[in-house]
Length: 181
Image 1 (cartoon, rainbow, N blue to C red):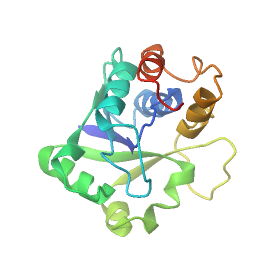
Image 2 (image 1 turned 120 degrees about the vertical axis):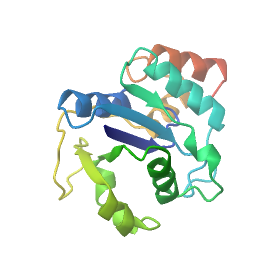
Image 3 (image 1 turned 135 degrees about the horizontal axis):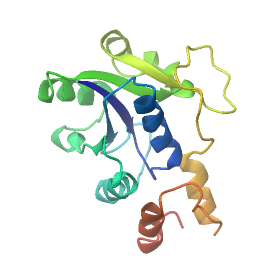
Image 4 (image 1 turned 90 degrees about the vertical axis):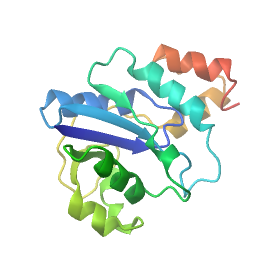
């Protein structure tokens, strides 16, 4: 089974993330998509609580048959490096053929991550074009949505609408928890 992995903070998850997974499924590059939120990004000082980010992911994928959310990083100790998560996924799903679904902006940086060479040697990348980014990497998926979690957090902070960028359930959680104010 070919499993596409979307890894990140998902603070919040948005339509661009979902589109990446849907495109990989539609193109037949993967059979399932696992969304794997990091417990705490080692490069960011603070994120929304893990349980709230997981709830947003669950709402965003509730009607998506081949999408799954994996809170696997709760089984790891900090720092939460991607290679540790990938090692654990390989142990727990030995039959899985994992592929990392990443934006073109991220693909060129993986070599600089903790054990980045190991990641690149052991996991195929599915690279998604990011509007406004001109990177010299092979692009597997060209259709994408120009949105970022930072953009959404800024819009919420400014009191501007985000309904066109996130699932309605995600927006409901953001408003209910008074996130990003």
